[in-house]
Image (cartoon, rainbow, N blue to C red; front, side, top):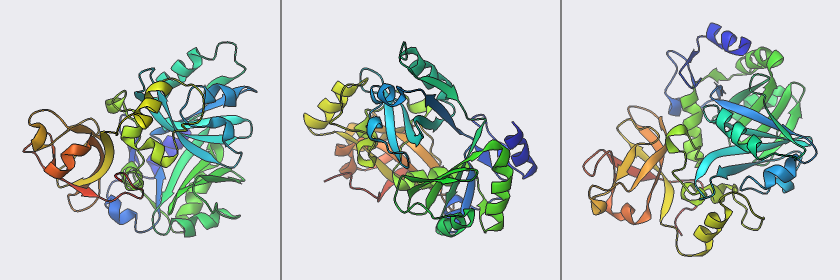
Length: 339
């Protein structure tokens, strides 16, 4: 826990899920105008190692793990046999190994469940969250700060380059993920601050995820969504040409038979929101149209969220908590949800 102890000396505070905040920090939307440096302590890493790692994960996850190159990453999902997501994750190649990044609150259960299916497969799972420190660098000036790490920056989304202390992954425009050896994390942290980054809490990173349309499954939303409801195929997390994996039949049927009735939308409200809360529409009266998947404050009392709702509800208006609750205003996403 030396890394957390160090962050505490920097003023960091942790909640029950190890999400970081810094007293007196700027509002998240303001932080994203510069270069926000976020300790991602609320995420963890599972390492799968062994000669059959790629084949095993290919048969468990929704993405094409076998095609994951050594300098790439991909979003993916892990579902029940009924196609409901137990977790969403980022999968990275590390030599022949594969790293699964997912919310720390879900990590032990997901690692245990996947390990149950290893059987005689030549792969094994280990929690390396204590060995590799995850840092997020995001904002309009993030790329300029990231250049100070030395070497060339990844030029494409989900491209990874190696660093002397670990690796750097470009997620999207203005967002980078760093995996740093724990022994060198303090040095990298100080170097990034000296290059112009500002310490920021987890809410800044969550807001950036919302604006990028990245839906993370959380304890409050486990088994709530089929991957397409959360737009996972739109960010490359679902491959419809690969073979079987848990839930594959339901996922494929949802894609090819009939129109998808629910989607994740980005919304704004002047009221706090949190994952798992119900979203209503007057057309459905007292029956919920959907629920909040991911939420964060933005600025001046405003909140942003990704909500998974019935598409038929859009024209009638969306409201938090009840049909008469705070109005939710739809905001754009970087990809097309409704044709």
